[in-house]
Image 1 (tube, helix red, strand yellow):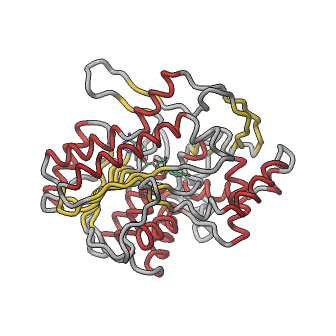
Image 2 (image 1 turned 90 degrees about the vertical axis):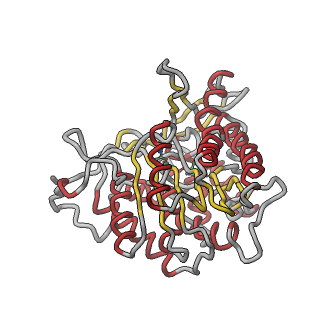
Length: 403
Ligand code: NAI
């Protein structure tokens, strides 16, 4: 089968396996050449391992110094008669192949991370492959829905990305038609805000750590991190002051509760604030696109732009496992969004956004970089991949790879 990129709005409906391999290989290459990460964390569990920050963290720890063994949980689709499957499926496949070829253990568990069943599979995998204990747990889920497994009633919470208390004007760019689409976002209801905290707040992270503590799967010195975003006053109305921001504040509070629980194991928990990046999750954030287009333009011009792998490498070498200990701010947050929040960067971004509109966003913002990154997330747009070649899907397993 010849695979073409198929985009609907801001959602990719196809993925190219060989491009996904290139993406994994480029990240492996980056961390192998960069300064080594120094940590004793050799047995790592990543929840949300198949793309974005979770995948980059997995690659950094497996190939960037610690040579960590990893268990990765994700929710991805394999190829079927319905379609090519999702990019994360191939990222998992190739991560495992390359990690195993260098002697690492790499277990992929595909399923709903909110479910009790996946918790059981993870505990079993920790028993089988990690001698019963885990040193580091990275919580990197990004999702719009969380099923409630506590009752037989098949209820689901849904997260929304809306402002709170006021409407917000903005725009989204359709990656399908390259059109700027103005948007007015109405404020969330109280129920929507509460449901977003259920999906993207700290409750499930805490439940995972409780489950692992109860299963006696936590190693001495075990740490856990979860990813957050704060942004600047340019994004606060839609992000920090909106529904997602409330969920992230809940996550920050959870990090303090988990830090107390892990103190019993000489361990720690931190929320880690990352920079804004194009990922499968972030292109969904309404009214956020003009900011990312301007931010990419400014940070690339200044030479301070980072992708997921550069962010994760800097997190592990300079912040979390730095020779002088973990660096946190006054709210006990680990920050790797410092370059984004540089006042000069923000000033220039604000000036660009002020002028940006439907006619000039491709020139003023870094739209070509934005789109290229989106295509590459799905395995397209890599110069060394022959996209005219036939792909035989038989080589890709269609089952969860937990052994
Ligand atoms: P992503 O969409 O690239 O990755 C999300 C991961 O979660 C994937 O591995 C996916 O398979 C997994 N996942 C989703 N639902 C699942 C489920 N029910 N069960 C198992 N796995 C599931 O997202 P990204 O952008 O890397 O986000 C990760 C975290 O980083 C999120 O908390 C996000 O808010 C945060 N963040 C993202 C920023 C950005 O600009 N992309 C900036 C700062 C923080």
